[in-house]
Image (cartoon, rainbow, N blue to C red; front, side, top):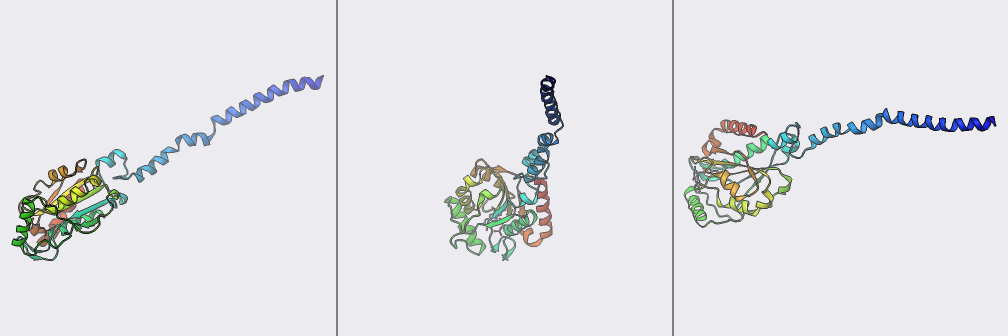
Length: 248
Ligand SMILES: Cc1cc2nc3c(=O)[nH]c(=O)nc-3n(C[C@H](O)[C@H](O)[C@H](O)COP(=O)(O)O)c2cc1C
C-alpha cells in the first residue's frame, strides 16, 4: 500500500520536473539564440561578395558607386577603336591616340581590353584618304564588320567605350558594335570616351544611350589626340581623376 502511494506521487512529480528542465533548457540554449543572430556574420560575407560592390559598405552604396573592389575590377571591360598611321596634328603614329587612353583606363581599373578592328583592310594610312573613306561611310550610314570574337559580355558590369571623333560622330564601325551587342549591353554601366582635335565628346554619350536602350550611360571623357602622344602625364592625370570621380 505504502509502495503504491509513493508511485502515485512520484510520477506526476517526475513529469513536472522534466517539463521544468525542458523549459529551462530552451530559454538558455545558446545554440538557439546563436541561430537567430548568426545572419549578422552572413550579411558581412554577402556584402563582401556583392557582385557590383563598391567599398563593401552595402548594397545601396554598391548601386551608387559602380566599382572599387578587386572583384568588381575584374568585371570591367574597355572596348575601343583607334587608328595608327597618319593622324591630324601628330604625323604618323604607331600607337593610336584612343588606344593610349584605353590602356590607361585598363591599367587603372584592372579592366580587360577589346579592340574593335575592321574585318577588312578598309582604312587608309594617310590622313586625307582616311577622312574621305570615313565621310563616305557616314553618309551611307555604313555598318562595317569588325574582326575577332567579343569577350562574353555577361561577365561585365561596366564597359568603357572609346573611339576617335570622326566627322563629329562615332566612327560607323562602332555603331556596328553597338547594334550587334545592344541586348547584351542593356542594363550595364556604359562610359564613353573620345579622342579628338577640337570637337570634345561630340555627343558620344547621348548617341550611345540611344544606340543601347536600357543601359546607364555615365559621365564621359574627351581627350585631345595630340596630348595622347605628347603630354601623356597630363592625360594620365585626367584619366585617373575622371575614373576616381566615377567611383572606381
Ligand atoms: C576621318 C577622321 C575624321 C575626324 N573628324 C574629327 C572631328 O570631327 N572632330 C575632331 O575634333 N577631330 C576629328 N578628327 C581627329 C581625330 O579625332 C583625332 O586625331 C583622334 O585623336 C584620332 O584618334 P586615333 O589615333 O585613336 O584614331 C578626325 C580624324 C579622322 C581620321
